[in-house]
Structure formats: C-alpha cells, structure tokens
Image (tube, rainbow, N blue to C red; front, top):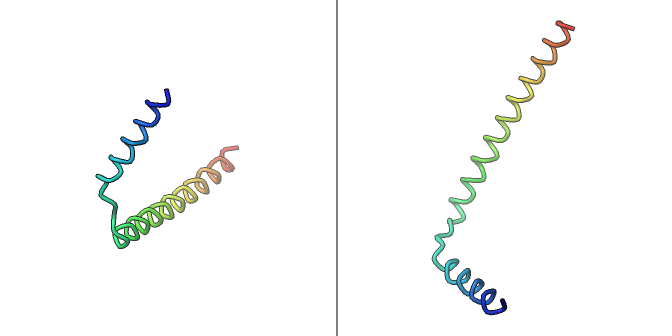
Length: 60
C-alpha cells in the first residue's frame, strides 16, 4: 500500500511537469471573462425573477 501511494505521488509530480500553465495575462483575461459572464447571468436571472414574481402576483 505504501509503495503504491509513493508511486502515485511520483506519477503526479511527473505529470505536473508536463502541464502548460497559462501566463499571467491569459489568466487575467480568463478571470475577466468569467466575472463578466457571471455578472450578466446574475442580472438576467434577477430580471426573470422580477418578471415571474410580478406575473404570479397578478395571477394570484
């Protein structure tokens, strides 16, 4: 069991060396995209919630 665990972490370390990490500018761009889309989706859900709330108030 100990040998398998050690081998696992050696393999993880080996694979992590192959990873192509993004540059700071690429990372910052991706963060801006995620934040912008999250904000737009939140606003969309807010508007839909308001409309459904008013529709239910009228119906009930």
